[in-house]
Length: 141
Image (cartoon, rainbow, N blue to C red; front, side, top):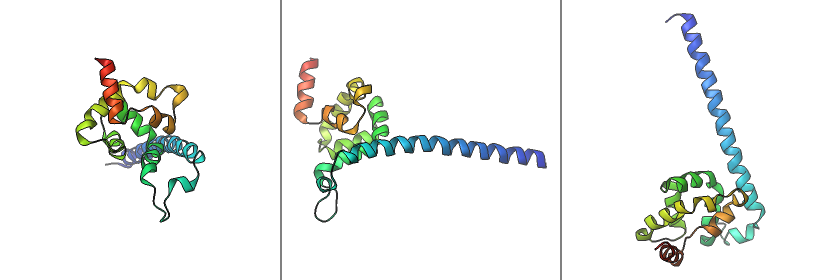
């Protein structure tokens, strides 16, 4: 390979790397902004137990704040590891998780409306209890 070809290849790799780094910064900033909004609305004492661990009741809230954009993508698809993880954190039984994913996907426009794009709003609106899922199913029938 001649010098011009290898320089061109190195230049292309540097430009591609810079592009990836810049796109990663945008995603990281959105995640940090969502997390900052979430943590500013809660006091640390509410989130942690006496041993310094995240309380069971707060795990879904914390996860939703950190993985908000990934959850949005999974809910739009109706499946994915983030949505499955949220179902587990919300204590949805394995047998009801498919229904949970379907219901989450069908309520996507409501969950991610421009005036409701927060982790708190997502959790408050998401039909996560078995009773919620049953009531929603009856309304659809």
